[in-house]
Image (tube, rainbow, N blue to C red):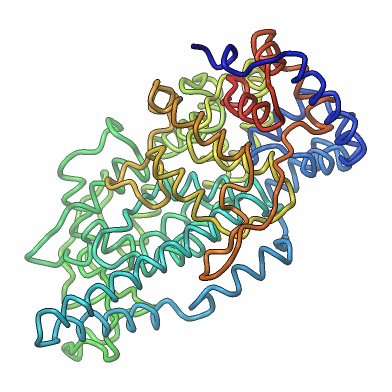
Length: 514
């Protein structure tokens, strides 16, 4: 039986929907009604999903000013209720070094307990502590995606985290994932690519995830060197060789992680080259000081300065410009972005020395990008689908519990921080539009559209679910979105027997999936 056929009386639906039209028309910002469908599509594509308040702001400032606000965001404050939730999280203002040291000490203490049962209990507490920290990091990600005014920066933060992916269950990196996203990724999401790449290289999470903490002269580990070239910069098939991977691995020897309170013991002549910043360490005693040939460049063995030189070479390589441009265009434009657009973006990357905001400006002002806004060519991945549904349903009403969203993303196989391999989640529609995924999306659409779904029940003992009413059918829908729906979708919506059924059908529609 089809979804449409299962929903019952058309007359009841028309009565209910007609009643709701009158109610919501009085409650939504009037200025949203004046937006063109193309403008709403632009907002939807570059943010975590259109809602009435973001549409009203776009109408107020105009498209070009809105684009400049997003490409060059000021330090826009989160809504007070969101800020308060984040501020209440444990350790939110503690130094990452201190947090990592505390967990390392806890792990050692648990492992030293003599009694087997007590040791297992202590280890369970330790694991739960790490799990709690990564859940808090995911909560911050979700809250910012839902409510931050600098929406493009939040979309770019997700994109770059996926590009520089790390997996939460490798070693103990869970305790620092929030810091990795906040400072290695978000701080540079619209800045210079070189700074972003360097920030990920200097973060203990990346060095532990890709094993460079084990990379030393005489015991070379090539994992990180290979992924920097294959995934982070030049891309597969871009002309580098195994010899280049080996040279970069040698350059990266001694670059690692150290949370010890005391500096390592070094020969006097090496002590001046030791670098420790937070958990990052360059240990000269572990470095290969031989000269290297990397991508045709001669690099003299001289310590950490070799790493900076190698990053400069990689960031200025034409293959890196093309690879980054294609990845961005695939994420924001289509699964097979036009080559002409990719090349113009790559040219901007090279011309501006990797200025990410400038590359994105080339993208958003391109006619090829505007064309895809009309045909809905870009299918939403699960994270974008879920966040955009909650944004549309609740707008500025701040949720009190992100755990349902974390659970939905895990069910949809795109859990935050949960991709095991360094290639990150796929950006292609084919990875996300299979029948199983669609059935799960329908279930989640029903959960979001039918009531609070646990989003307004604080994740604390003895709390109750606060009342909440998802309002998907609002003035923005009647003024703009409705005109973009196909006759088939409109006919299905007309069959809804309640506002909850209507919400479910709309959030399950092909148009909302794009």
